[in-house]
Image (cartoon, rainbow, N blue to C red):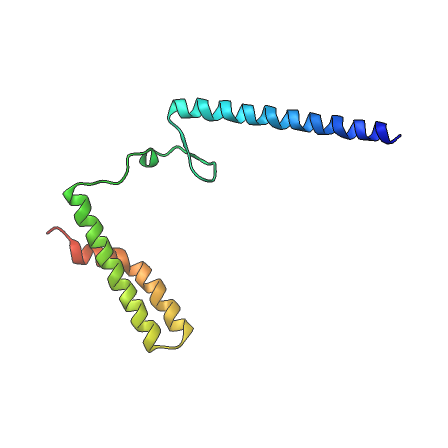
Amino acid sequence: MRARARAERERLAAEAAAERTARAAAAARRRARLDKLGVRFDKLGVRSLSPSTRGRGRQTGALAVRRRNQTRLLIALLVVANVVVWLIDPSWAARALALVASVLVAPVLYTVLFRKA
């Protein structure tokens, strides 16, 4: 009786191992096929199909550097403003309002500070 039960368990374990091996082989074939097509996988295993994330990296021109610096400056100003509100006013409502206002005002402030004309 025990021998039959053990043999059945071993048979089921062997079937499960064969199924796992088949699934791993299918996944490897799928990854190879998608790599051949130029589709990349991120750490979570999700396909990245957007053209902006296909290994081009970030822009390196002078205009891109200037735009990044302007964005960093604006973010620094907004963080400083939020820290000042955080230190001056102890109420959570004022802190939340300052945070929401800074998010809503950021595009307008960027346009006003860094417009071309």
